[in-house]
Length: 164
Image (cartoon, rainbow, N blue to C red):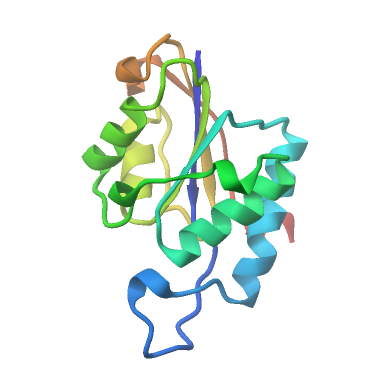
């Protein structure tokens, strides 16, 4: 079995006009929602063996805040430049290249690609992921190369507004 958690970065700030898209930080709500979702994941018993994040400031900050709630060392987060600006097929390639010994993966990135990726793999409809939203999918297979909608079960779809 392989389990994939697809997490959209938390709410980012548009306050700084001089920053590139890549360098936008989390805003106050994002700094609240990322740990909140980490706590919700921890309450569900989520324990990723690997976290892969986009290199953008908002995605990596989200991954770091969530990882702390999951007792996952933030220094062990793998930053993959392919996740920033990726399409759904690019994200599939990233996941398929996950080491075979990893059974539980948390992927942190950006919309619309994450929503499209989740929709491509989930046997149930996936609405557009809100900021800090997460879709959990379990696959009845032994290899990341074998993941597909046909062997998937959607475990849950959650987001911060469910917890306010």
